[in-house]
Image 1 (tube, helix red, strand yellow):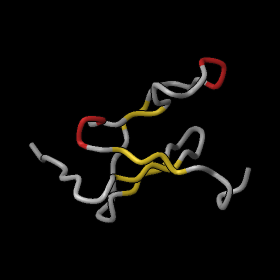
Image 2 (cartoon, helix red, strand yellow):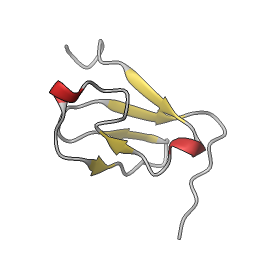
Image 3 (cartoon, one colour):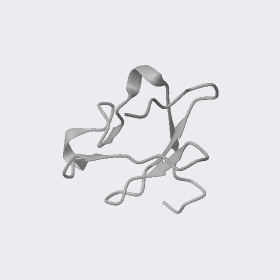
Image 4 (tube, helix red, strand yellow):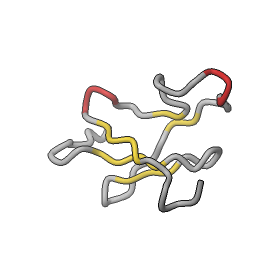
Length: 64
């Protein structure tokens, strides 16, 4: 798969804190769990597998 065919996983507030591999991924494709850091556009990319994540429109990140 290249970047154009890689699916984007859309997340909502109930999915936060977000991590990869996500619960929908098959066990055989597992890698160490990493928590995702979203940029100011609401997007993140897993450093292991390259899965793209995006916050659904209207999702608000709560900061500590």
